[in-house]
Amino acid sequence: MNHEERRQILETQHRGLRALIARVRDTAGDTLEAEGGPPGALRNLVGDLHEQMEKHLATEEALLGPVLEKIDAWGPVRLDLMRAEHAHQRAVLAVLRSDRGVLSPSLLARRVLGLLDDILADMDAEDRDLLGARVLRDDVLQLDASDA
Image (tube, rainbow, N blue to C red; front, side):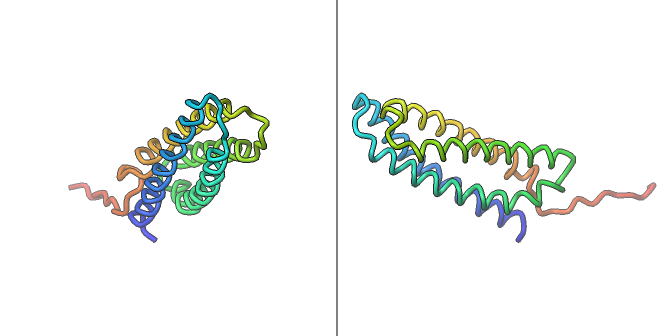
């Protein structure tokens, strides 16, 4: 698989996640407007988001991990940052998904909104710093080693 194919797969997943995040955001907003009304729809969407994010994070790690490790001098740093952000997202999603009414509906909605902001910021950074043509490129740079 070449880098352009990797980029297309991950950008397609990002678009799908952004659409789901918009639905989750709307539902969290509705929950807050209802002053902590029934959070069933929000909890269901958090479950959907958790499942989609798990799939996406696994795909991203499988497609980008081996490439980032060797792509340039900053590759290992990029890889470590990606893994740390993914661990954070997984942990927060797991806690929010496992909430069985411990958090009030309004607190759940606020926590979900905060996580959505984090996920969107992370995807924007990945689009720019990992999937951009400056980093993930298929062309081979040939340097002229002649003395002429």
